[in-house]
Image 1: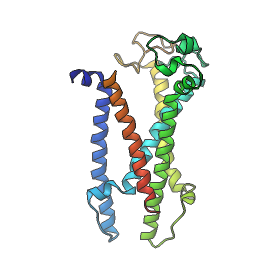
Image 2: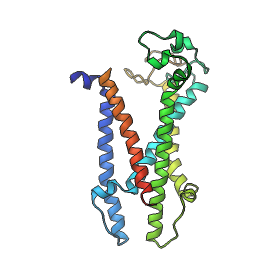
Image 3: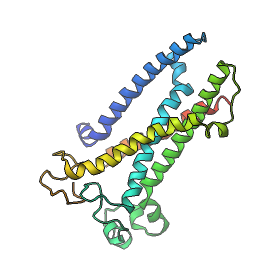
Image 4: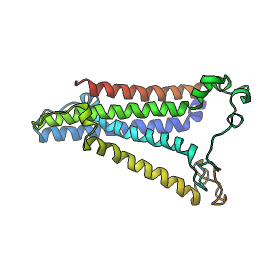
Amino acid sequence: MRRFFRDNGIALLFGALFLGSVATQAVTGWHVFNHEAEAHGSETIGLGRYLISSHFGQAVLENWQSEWLQFLLFALATMFVVQKGSPESEEEAGMSTDKEERIGRYAQPDSPRWAKTGGWRTTVYSYSLLIVMSVIFVGSWAGQSVTGWTEHNAEQREHGQPTTSWSGYVRSAEFWEDTVQNWQSEFLVIGAVAIFSVFLRARHSVESKPVGAPHAETGTS
Amino acid sequence: MRHVFAVFLAYLLFILAGIVFFLVVGLRHL
């Protein structure tokens, strides 16, 4: 049991922070929802009903999608472009060899099974993190679009305005404002961390180069 | 590694279930 907690420290710490934050978001979002309902003279709802509402779903998923997009694009970008001096960048962009990746005939006895087999399994496994992140990004963005659409139409009805189709909603300024307001902050942080980590240090952290590493040294952490 | 894989699976299933859940929530009003 102690080993379970020690070996999973990062996942458990951030899992707990996530649960605390999403619970707080649920309670505060429920209050906001009911304040608005009262202001419009509509019925208020219980917390249980709020948890299965589009209001809550949209608020959760519009933040999810941007995080997955951020990690996905960062993983993709580091294949093709470099940042001189950054610990998160390769020295030179370019494709690695099978030997460097330890796949196919270069696999070790304890390499993952699909890394050893070669063929389509090794190709799929080679990009499995990107595949999973893409599925989650597309899924959560789609979820944001349908919950946002439902929420938008509920508001339209409340104001006696005409409702819109899903395809109309995903072409609306409202949907794109909700989307890109999350993207902009993600992209700024990715770019900033890449360039900050060239000249600044976080001793003991994998996000940093060794404190004494020259600014020009790329790809060490 | 089984105790680490269990956490990996929990994360993956939780995230996928969350997405499917809210997709259903959004589409339920159709």
